[in-house]
Image 1 (tube, rainbow, N blue to C red):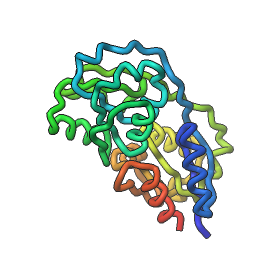
Image 2: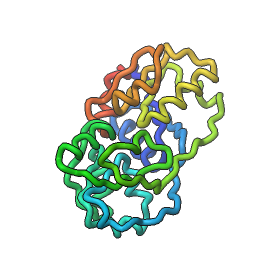
Image 3: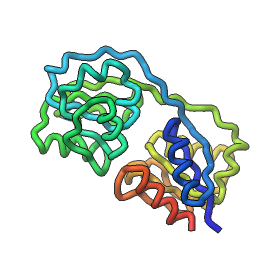
Length: 224
């Protein structure tokens, strides 16, 4: 019998990922650890930049009307999901990274970008690099209170982890709930996220490409 797969990401991604898991005939545990909300921001003069960097789909999703003022900037995005939301917002995506933010920025630099704008979350994995001229937060990811009893269902499951913050938080919650990490398998969206989860899990693996379909396929293999 396959293990249940726990989805920790915020909405609307939580519902979408859980539905994709259930469509495969597997059991999804819906346990979002964060809630994403838009925050006020001031749109800078786009003429100051030669590219727009997006490391999360939440950035174009929550940027609001200000996003339209950045349509002239070529977009470098991490992952196909981020690229898709950017295109839906009317942006022109010129490059899609298949790893993480660090790799995306390095690739953008190699392509000639030298004065980029990065819009993202208030808590970011990356905001400093020679080519990043300015970083602006357009959304915040706030922790949701989780009852320790709700964590019991993670024992014996495969846990999907979409971010380093989620990896660190689920590790802390599991430890505080007294759950043996060796009963849990971790499917992480990248090697950096896997590292953030720490050690002592039954198994831990990172997706080869940072997109939801690849991550779900990895979790499915771990669930058997």
